Image (cartoon, rainbow, N blue to C red; front, top):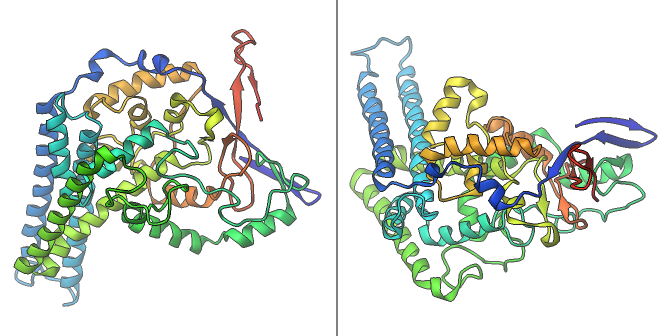
Length: 440
């Protein structure tokens, strides 16, 4: 998006997003049949892999901790010993949290029935893994399935639903001073919006950090960033919550039991081993898992390039293709990008494919994604975003502030009231020329 200012009006040259008219058959037929095969044994081996890596990280940190003493290493100042120990265990929490996110991803696949051919195995393994990570398995499985069915739907999606101009209490849209698609805005309106929304780097940094650290529990406990039409007090622990059906009540209770056992386990461990030991070995890595979960999913579903739809324009394929693949930690270099991808089983790198067919297990998703991308490229669609990391969260947090109350295909506007992208449809009647015609 490039911009220019003239006579008190700022105008930007926008990116064009081709609104897909592909059918689900078009998408699924591009994926090799072997990619749909699920194996309980193979999936289980990835659980073992994650646990072995995490155990190795712990053993390494414990061993190195014994070496941080004057008997083994000479440091120029006594305070450097606790500083070195702090750095060591900070590294432990980071890497443990990253690979424990891989366990989270496997539990998430259980909820999609991608772990094995058996629903009983899927739900049993998923309940154990997610409960151990503080997640109400069935409660989230149910709402997450609704998210997949209605991704990017303004009134049906369950999470990362954009706030509208009116919901934020912003000045009403004035067609004489701004373009509904966000290509131009007067300096007067821009000033009003910036004052209302705030646009300081410090504010964006604090907002993004708060989102990463507290976003996940806030969503579970009080529906933060969730569907705006749900009543106040909606949460994932109440069997009578509006997003659950009566026949799902027992599943919600079972999920709550898992959380009670999780809390009891943490409490008992603190009593047995002490708070600081549990804090260092489990609670901080747990916070890292929550952080990675929010970072990954926020960037998959939030970007100035991605459309959101109201009911009249929504279809399942359009929703599934309103996501981005990103290389987690790819901005930190190729090695970190490789580690980020494989530690989290490609959940960030193959996310578009995951929304097209959520029953494909992660170990087949790489091949399936390659095949799907080739089909999408034929339709002029490329859904690969910038690498996932903290800098990208900051950028997206600044650029994605609100959407308009009017219109059926919406793109985020920034605090200046400008949108980076506008929708375009491929005109099927214009032969095969690939002509794109804007549709407002």
